[in-house]
Every structure is written in structure tokens, then in C-alpha cells.
Image (cartoon, rainbow, N blue to C red; front, side, top):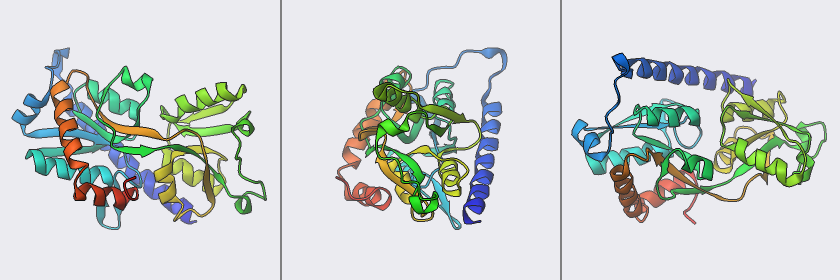
Length: 279
């Protein structure tokens, strides 16, 4: 029952976020299909606003009681204070939609934990790394899975069905893993649920496997004791923010600020609060 209630709550919040993004999309469409002017740092500073998109999860941005919290939220608050501009923060969980919104100039910055890979480098420009993370297999512990022990060897994923959110960054890694083990891993892209909802479905026994960022998974373990997250799917990866390739001054300015801010005690406290001590 606890998992079901959390799933309903999460779904309602996600629907609210989707509705807000539909409104934003309709509001910002230009009549006549006129080309968009390139928006770099000078245009952003002149407008006094930076449009940022992030995703809703247990670390980056979430609601706790009547308070909004999150690593990405507090990073944006620090940037807002430093640059003296207003940060408009939007929620949209699909990374593909984030990238599309970036190119359509609905957003200036994607501020979420994005694993840096060759495929995404062709679409966006990455900032310097902000965090380290890795992807883990989420499955049930034996005592919650009729005594079936969790999978520990990648070879045992052959012919298994793994559910992931549509356009998840995990898909590329699972495809590569399938080649590495020389067998098929069946990937089901879920168009409705995001990663944390899929983790809840694993805990409830609705599906057997999903893939999740380790840091998010470790947060979810506290409320979902059914799940096992000890099997790595990827090596430790660099995670960064992303901007348009056509915004080089914005990229340089963000990198400069991140380089300075990461050396401060404020960043160390923030990182420890959501990820643990800086390694």
C-alpha cells in the first residue's frame, strides 16, 4: 500500500509538471515559423532571466512535506545569487524533450545529472563535470522475490526483460552490455512512468528489473526496503549540465562559475547533503 500511495503521488506531480510544460510550449511558439534568434549569455543577461530545465527525482528536485528541495534547485539558487538574474526552473523528466527544448530555445540550460557520452556530445555542449555517478540494476531482494537471489553477473541478464523510461540514458548502456555478453537483453521503454516510478514497480513486484542512477537508488532504499541495488550496470561516469553548442559564452561562464563554486565550502556542504562527501 505504501508503494501504491507513493506511485499515485508521484504520478500526480508528474502530470502537473507535464501540464506546465505544455503551457510553456504553447506560449512560446512563434507565429509564422520565424527563425529564432540565437540566445547566448548577452541575450540572457539582457533579459534578466535564465530558463533552466531539470527532472523530478529524489536528489535533483523533489517535494518533501511542504518544502521544495534538491541539489539542482540549490545549485540554481546559488547561480541566481552570483549572476544577479532570475532563474526560471521547469520540470520535464524526458531527456530527449530537454534536448529538444534546448534547441528550440525554450531552455538555456539542462541542469540534471546527465551521463556524458559520445551520442549526446553530438547534440549538446557539456559543462565541466559536476558529480560522479553510475547506473545500477534495480531488482528485488531474495526475501521479497520468492527466494530468488539477485543477479550479480552480467551474463545472467541474457534474455531478461528490463523496463526503463522512454529515451532513458540507460538504453545506450544496456545495448552495449548486450553486445558485451553476446546475448539479447530485452529493453522495454515505458512511455508513462519515469525511473523512480519504475523502481517502485520493482519493489511492488509489478516488474522485475529497471536501471537507476546509484545516488537516486540509495535514496530510495530508505523507503523501499524490497529493492536491491548492488549490481553495477556501468562504470563510474562523469555527469554534467548541458547547453546549446551555439551558446559558447554561456558555456564558458558556467564553467568558470562551476570551477570556483566547486572549491567552496558551500558546494561541499551541498554535495554532502544530497550525494555524500566530495571524494
